Image 1 (cartoon, rainbow, N blue to C red):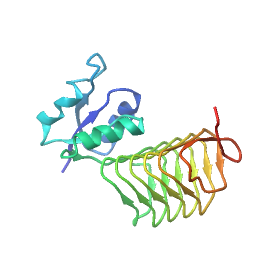
Image 2 (cartoon, rainbow, N blue to C red; image 1 turned 90 degrees about the vertical axis):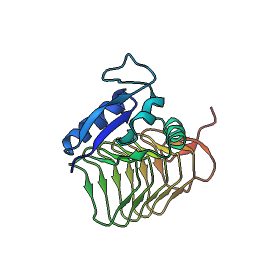
Image 3 (tube, one colour; image 1 turned 45 degrees about the vertical axis):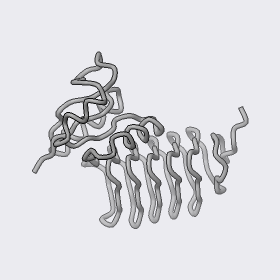
Image 4 (cartoon, helix red, strand yellow; image 1 turned 180 degrees about the vertical axis):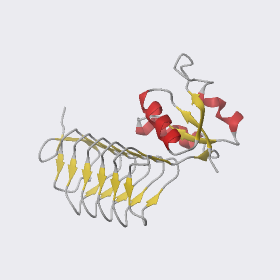
Length: 198
């Protein structure tokens, strides 16, 4: 039976999720956003309490904002949005509220946390452990047996070598290459990735 889904956040990311919902055969009810002028917006975010019988997905790219909303409204029913073109191994565990976009690949024995974004064309290889509120940007690659901590943002086109651990709350720049564990919070850029001091 199809699910009726409301998206929290009516910007570009939310519109991409709307397309996933429709392609998955579920029903998009509309958007909630504190900017009521946005397309398809039927109320502010706090109005979610009026729709407890519906499913929700947070369509906001910012990890801290996504986390704040999920914690503030933890009693909602959260929808996991998976694009039909994503290639996901049968034994992959995916947390509630996570969004997996077109052409993403998630290989065997991996675990994806709650309210994550696995963006277009991202590759998550075997035995990865992805924490909650993580954003893996388009065309990023996480090789085998990688662990990525909560609320970490992996930039577009970044590559993480196999057997790497990345701590919580890290920002990895676009196109960066991680060849050593990252244990200290901060922003990392370059090839190989180094902590930015600016």
